[in-house]
Length: 101
Image 1 (cartoon, rainbow, N blue to C red):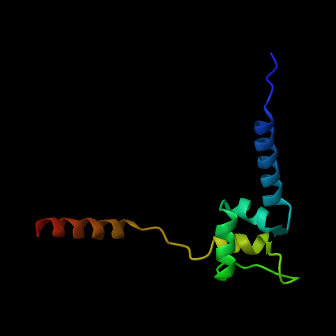
Image 2: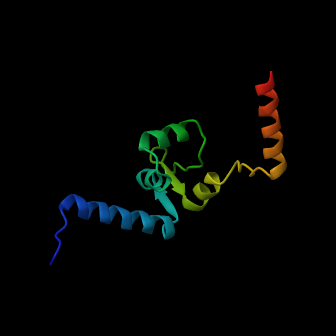
Image 3: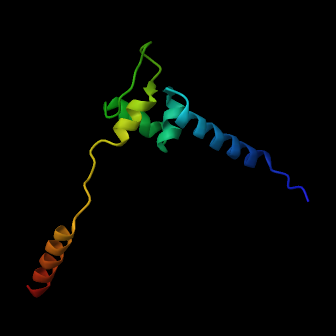
């Protein structure tokens, strides 16, 4: 039995394939591609560029472009270290003291 996909389903498949290609092959991303790659809206990405939170380029003063490797490095900045056993023990002790008060 053959299963026919709707136009909408085909578009979703095409978008997923495109996103995978963007993430692995293209070095320079457009705003649309960068937003899709980051999983955010274009307006969110625009705000980040206006606040200079994310590295980007404007070679002609208007269109924004993003270097994929710089975006990946930016996503991995401000790493939060994992807690160790001592941290959990200290936290648990503090909670127990607060309950006693």
